[in-house]
Length: 220
Image 1 (cartoon, helix red, strand yellow):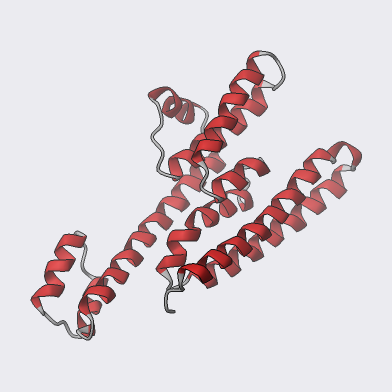
Image 2: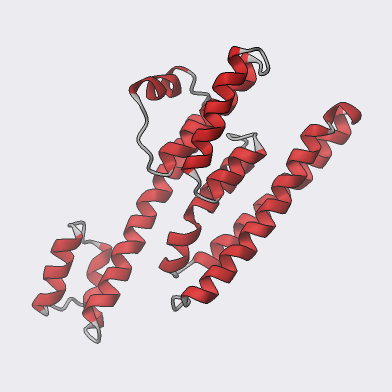
């Protein structure tokens, strides 16, 4: 699949964000109305919303396949959706900010939570859950954490969050391989045979550049 132009990519990203916003609003409305619903109705509605998220994630994956421009643009959204589906993240607003790659707003929310828990406006359990989500999102977005925050993550890690970390770490490796594949295609031109070396080549991008420039060909 050929990479899309900037305008088309921007429109597609906006469309994806609007769909995700709608689903996150459903989850948020559900949590706000939880006291008005019986447990069975709440669980069924939540299950339906998570199924919609899963379908959305499948569509997103198909759209991104083979298009590194979209992988770069939408990878954060994909991680956020998977966090919601696995229920590693349970806070719609945190999921939304994670998906939109908004580390500044995540840090602002965390600062507000720090104040709220100090004055008793936020319970300690809710604070811990949401802080774990925010710190995990920040780390996945490549933000540097303080030693104190890193320790907080380690001490409060749950089985679900740990599994999410493992799964998304593998996704990160796959994205790197796809990036190298794109690099091969870009620098070899008609010397397309060299692309097959990607499957067994584990060197740095500098070495890939050197290999491609040498004109060496490999058999398919």
